[in-house]
Length: 244
Length: 270
Image (cartoon, rainbow over all chains, first blue to last red; front, top):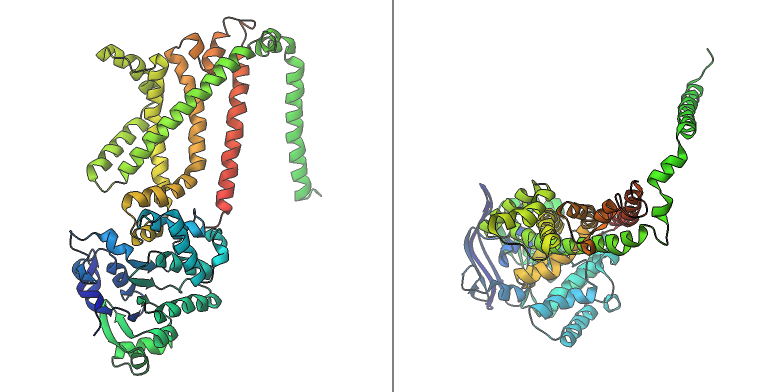
């Protein structure tokens, strides 16, 4: 058993009377790639957004590398700077060039010198194959390029782990592959990853663990190949029969 | 009869043009053009050498632009503080800002300006800095700030929530997120409405005339008003017409600029 990167215990989240998460226990080991699948409205994105507290949990515990992020004494911003996040809608800063998108938080949070920030940024742009776009603005990039820049932006903080919130759902089908290739490379380098996705192929090939959620609970989890080929629960079977 | 719908439309249109032409001809024949010209465009007043233009431009327009710039800069700074207070997580800040904004948007600017320049000295024996004009400008800033606060608040709220989330997820603090990510985008959104606010302020500086000012501190309307009773075109409305042209020379390009900026913004892709 590897050390815990993300440990979620008894997590509840409700908006008013609407309960989105109904007691989630969830674990990502250091270096693991855990994919979360499930129908829309199942709470998988809410779970992911609770992990860096973009959503405020209603009850339960969330430990990042053993530190309770709901504890008032925890410096949440410091913890967040070690958790890279990639959004479905990319959320690049449209008023900044690609390079400035990658250096902004490095300078403001990591207090790196301009030279160092630029160097780190260029290295990560090269990694996602977009070195030639450093002075472009986000509006002039395709969706797939924007998402790869977003990944490079998160990586430039040298995070311990990465959260992906349906990273390919807003992309045209022909652009999905480039983004998945970058993610696969990251996984092979040993990055700890939590990926909410509809890409079953990616989950099967790259994931160490697959978690199926429905209606605010974890229904089933296990090795991706097993869950996808031999789902034990009837809800998993019915979901997979619709998407596969 | 054989009148088609198209022919009838042409007939109606022709009649409308005929009425217009008749009105123009009648006006041209009836009006006493020399008298009109002497009263509204007096040759003495419009003379470049010793007419009204000198004071209207070197004192009037210069001061109008200066006062507008001061009121705009002050109003923008005050408006930004108020907008951030309105969006503050601290409830009393929100209440204070809301109360201020609703109060000053509900009053005529002139009331606030007279209060600052005359009311305060009478009540407390204290005069705001900068004399009458300074006091009036402070009043203008107080009102402009309330309007700009609402504009800026709308701009800040128009920045997608994902922008804040992206910045916060990178570990940026709330202050840095606001300054480096949200405000630059918000300002871009509010450039057209802020330019409109600038045009409104140009016109509002004319209210300073009612407070009175030293000769060299007069803005455009005050200079024009004084030329109604003195100078080469005294006794005619010429100086007001001249002032109107000077105002339009500034405001029309600006309103055109706003229209252009708005068109460009509508076309811009995110």
